[in-house]
Length: 560
Image 1 (cartoon, rainbow, N blue to C red):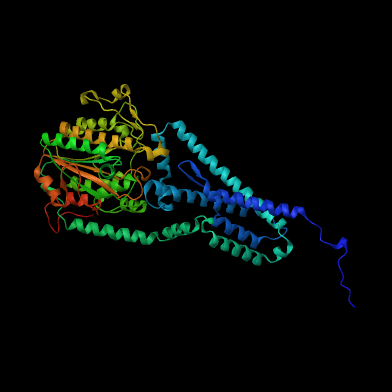
Image 2: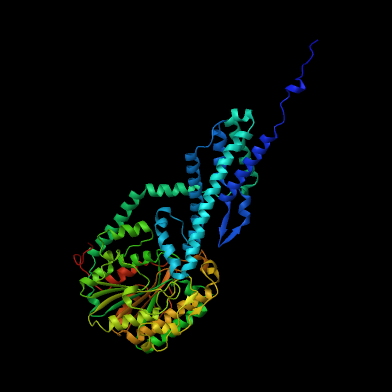
């Protein structure tokens, strides 16, 4: 008879509580990492439900560590730094990928949007007190540094405790262990789909493909540019039908279709527009209007300016950069060749504007050139009333020759919470110091509460309409042509995602033939646009001017 043998008590494997403590510490480190990667913050508020979801990227990291963990080996500093940098980048990418659609109603583009970060900081510098901006930048940098430090420490602890706490059989069968963990997590995700948060890596891969495909994108853009140049060569571009009339192109910031279509805005904007229409008709002006589809939404005004200047829809930063390097003739170039003095007035620009070489204005005035001596109002470094008065005094009255003037008005720029007052007597505006004596109109919200900005936005647009009506009636010759156009819709947070990208365009002149030409192209009488959707692109305004007011000849004009 064989008697079974049992190990002596002294041979039994002793209980090792330190191994379990290590596994618990590894689990804590993993969930700390997962919390950092999965947390969502919207409008300065934490979405607490996001903390209950598992980050796919953290799960991939955990499985990789299970497979690669080897007893006696520490996590090399260079590997820890690279992993920390990668996870920090993924978090910053995920944050931007969530915020950009909320503001601009489009997907985040790493290549293009990363180049606009200095502009974003400048925007806040111009619209917020400097100490708030410096505090915000400091807090952001500190938060990123703290995030990276926490990630690095958690990675080191996870690697160390995972090796120490994993039983020897599991260490020897790392692939089997990883497969088991993967299967368990996959089963959990199938049983509870909401347990996994959105993956960031597929979006990063898509952005990488975009960057690697830049040559094809450039080739496509070059083809579009060549077609526009060929169209220009086949179009009469002498602008003879304008005779000696000056053309004023006025671009109004954030003036979108929602000013008319949104029931929160129309009750304020429509009466102002109807009053302006009646006043201008009484002064002998005729007018028509339309909706055109802007290439951008909620921001990115320079894309709309480039579209207006080129006759090509410029809806990306790479398209903008390529346009500036192209041989395409911009709108001001045609007016130069037609014998007009071309002037651009940009009160929101403070520094030299090298892009101006492409736009070919004979003279460009930026904020330091205008000589304003009053206070700033939010984003606007000077009131639009001062800008319009300055244009009337310094350009319209001083230059008898036909003009082409582009004026960029900034008073309706987000965040809409500080708006300049109106000076009743334009003769008292002078150098603008009078605005120190008049209180601004303020609203109790800021960038993080734009959903509450409807009253302020409506008031800003109504004020722009009133100022433009008075400017035209006071200073514009009835024979001239005035075109007023919005650059894009206001931010998504204000009007919502499911809105068209359309902007209003108004044409005002005392010359009926000018108005008839635009109405022949689909514009409707008056200052309230009536076109049904879909609306033509903003680039059509370029061709409405160049082709509509020139003599047609196959060889006239030049696209280069």
